[in-house]
Amino acid sequence: MNTSRIEIIQGDITKQAVDAIVNAANTSLLGGGGVDGAIHRAAGPELLAECRTLHGCRTGEAKITKGYRLPARFVIHTPGPVWHGGGSGEEALLASCYKSCLTLAAENGCKTVDFPSISTGVYHFPLEKASRIAVSTIAAFLKEHPELERVRMVCFDGRTKAFYDRALEELT
Ligand code: APR
Image (cartoon, rainbow, N blue to C red; front, side, top):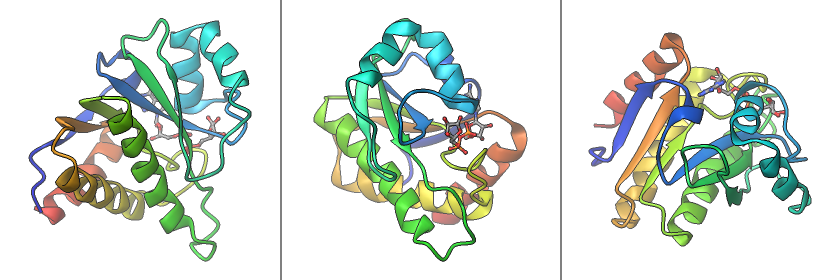
């Protein structure tokens, strides 16, 4: 699988000047902790005001807003699945998060998209599984979408990055 357009970096997703950053949201889309809280803090109150007009989002689906005070043009919000042991379709739902976000990004003319590690914080999705699902879903989508120039995983800590580096190596 060609993975030349996928990159794994360590950093703060709110600082990335890309076309779209993805927010690991909850189904209310009204903000929270973790990366959701960081994105809302950096974007400013207009982000929440626009999110209020969206009336929530189902797990695995995605909705797009402007980026406001963020350096990114758009924020794509997706509620990831909460990990309940793997028997409730969590893996398919996580794959759907990545696919839904990339579909929206492509529809909105985005060429560069940054993702956080969806569901692996408060939602307790195991990192080894989540990282494999993420990079394989992204690689499959990029194969069908040459218009997307680059997708990055922006990992907040070294432990998370190590899992995504390994998952990407396994794919090449
Ligand atoms: N930049 C990049 N990644 C970040 C940042 C940041 N500024 N802040 C946190 N992260 C990372 C976390 O370290 C973790 O690896 O994002 C990953 C996802 O963790 P969470 O933010 O806890 O998201 P998730 O597990 O999907 O849980 C979502 O948490 O914040 C609430 O409202 C949110 O209810 C939702 C739930």
